[in-house]
Image: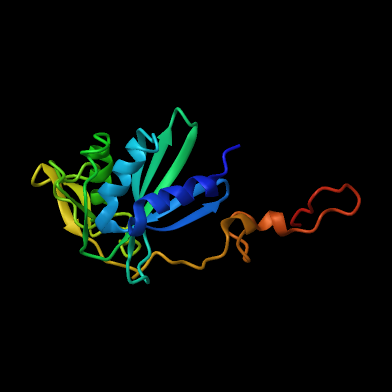
Length: 210
């Protein structure tokens, strides 16, 4: 088995300050990259390290962190039978260079990340939404995006068309501390009264209300 730490160290050495950290966790190698050097890092991995396939580009939102967003790239090398993850951080309102010149497959992935998190990719030839519709407001995978959304769709029978209307925002962040649904409610729900009845001592069957 390839020593992932041994793989990461020469990459970091070759790229200098462009790679700010190397970590191995759960059998996976992650490189932390400076956002300003993302194209340089990806070009090195594609060429010198033979990670020719871009599997995915995605985001992550940490609203309490100064650099709120992670942009994460997953790469695959068929010749080495290895996967590697590259992660960089961005503040809200910051953009990052597109890696389409290195990995043409990044086109749709970067648009998805923009659509879901609002992270813009500089140099992308078609930086517009891809999963939501043209009138959509907000970025659905941000933690401060309400579960109900900002607007709702309904069919207006008078106008004979689909219309948008605002909905009320019911929470600041999607950070809930509710009881686990697998543990059941502490009270008896309507229709479940018989489940709480004591069993019949002679037959073993639940008792019946006289």
